[in-house]
Structure formats: C-alpha cells, structure tokens
Image (cartoon, rainbow, N blue to C red):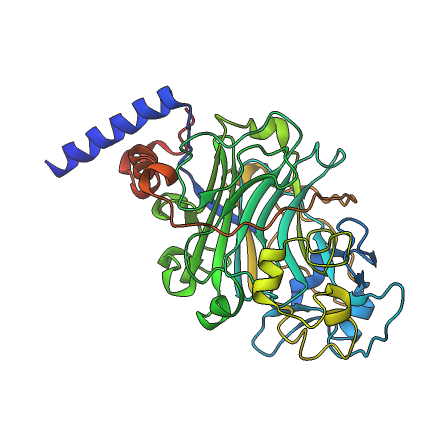
Length: 413
C-alpha cells in the first residue's frame, strides 16, 4: 500500500507539473570546484577600484593589499575571512572611503550547476552592505542577469534574495517557497524580491546560531535558493566532503523559487560569475541628504548621533563600528548534473600560491566588469500562509525522494 501511495503521489505530481508549467528536474549533482582552505582565494579576481557600481564609500583593494592588510586571509580554523578595514583613522573630508574587498570568481556557472556556500559569519552593522551574488557574463548587465543570494544592510534581521533582469522575467504565481514575495517583476529596481522568513538568517542572530548554509540551483526548470540555519542543515550537506554528490530532492521547500513558467532561465541568464563583497553606505543606504535611504530601517536599528551614514560610521577609527563587518566562509562548492560537459580546469592566475585548486572548474574562465541595481529593504510583515508561500503539489515535489526518478536518472518534462 505504501508503494502504491507513493506511485499515486508521483503520478499526481507529473500531472500537476504538466498543467501548471512549474516543471522541475530531479538530479544528482557531482562536485566540480571547491573554494576552501589555503587555496580559497586562488581562483578569484580582485576588483581593485572604488565602488563604481553601487557608489559605496569604499575602495576595493587588490590581492596584495588585501593580503598584507589582512582584509582577505584564511584564519586558523581554515575559513576564509573577507572584511572591511577597521583599524585606519579616517578624518572628515569631502570624499572618504574605507578599504574593502570585492572578489569575482574566474569560473562561470550556468544551467545545470548547483552552488552551495557554508558561512559562519556575515558582515553586519550600521552602514554595512554585504552581498554574495552572481553576475552574468558575455553581455552587459542587466541583460546578462543577476542573482542575489545573500544581501542586506545595517542591522537587518533577515536575508533578502532577488533576481535582476531586463523586462519579461517574472516570479510565477504560487512558486513553491517558504520566503515572502515582495516584488514579482525582475526588471524592477529591487528585482523580483523575496524576504527570508526563517529565523537566524542575518546579523548577530545568524552568528550566534553558528552560521548557516545557502544553496543556489540553476536549472532549466527555474532558479531556486535554499537557506538552513546551522542546526537545520541537511545531513547530506553537513556530512558531505568535497567529493560527495548531492541530491536536492531531500532538501524540502526552497526559501525563494523562480519557476521557468514565469521566466525563461536560458533567455534571461547567461553564465554567471560568483561575487563576494562588502560596501559601505552607497545608493541603497543614502538619500540626497546623505541620510539613510530607508529611514525605517536605519533609524530603528542604528540611532547614530547625526543620522549621517558617512559621518557617524566611516569617519573615525573604524572600531568598534566595523568590528563585525567581515565574512567568515568555511567553503563554497560548485556542482553539475552533467559531469561529462565540464572542461579542463583553467590556469590559476594568483601569484601568491603555487598550489592548484582541489577540484577542476565546471565551466570556462571569463572575467567581465558590470554594474548592479540596488535593491530596497523590505521587512517581512509576517510568516506567509500556506496559500501565499506554496501549494501542496510543489511542496511534495521538493519533499519526496522518488525511487523511480533515481532509476530513470534526470527527468526532463
């Protein structure tokens, strides 16, 4: 009876998928690249410029400066640290910047790839704007697409996820997610924005919980983002090594879901590079009066003396203002559901290490510059109801592990 019930569930899922357009692929992913340990920084390009995309008050430094200033290094625990300078005394001036780091992966990832990142600490604090995101290659932004996986400002208590595209890409109705949709049009300035509703996804609470894990799935069926606080990380991830395969069918509902029924993934997203950065103030935080662009967030969480992002944060010694403005990342792993398509690894351009990465790259090496549109800050009003966040069938597709699927292999509907 149990096997019959499972089969009936499966048949219903196939019928629903065909009728609704919320198609999905069940596949096992194999690792193709790991960024971790002493070699974490080897396969990245440093921005080495002022923040000329979001106009933050930072100067992104080159690798040599980042290393010598200990703004980018591997700590004794083997985790990558990326941080804002918090030791330099900065005096008032018409234009003031702190040193920071922005790195872009030399590898690109597209449809068929899965990216998983294990984070111990996210930068937080008044004026901080950290993000882990992807930037499309080959053509100009936003034609190439952008995916915001981890992003927030100031003392927010939750993460925000978004897609940024040209017109024509939308989040489908009833996408099947636990997060709260704020905007469904991916061409709007804030993108098709989803606010995380799970606890401990940002700031001090995230760090106190031991951090967490995010996963990004790029698939012809859609783009999906998962988040798990440390106690909730699936065993298949927490016990995995850099040679382990992953199966997304055991992960449950994603935090943000963008089915292809609302956005043709191959049309709106070229191969993507990974980007990690920390900027300060910037167009998301500032208005014409050099005050917080989102008063309800800045005023309620920061309460600085003059309410000036620059004067009350950047100017001065940098500590304690930026003592928590750092990333601590255990590892980033990239996977593919088509290992036969992975080309040979590129040459590492780093002059600071002669060791090759532990795993080969999944796609070609390509570096391009680009810009990105700032998003808006949204406080989720409440945990969405079942009707708002998902539907029964889409939940089942993410929760069932189907032996028939494993026997057939990758299912493409």
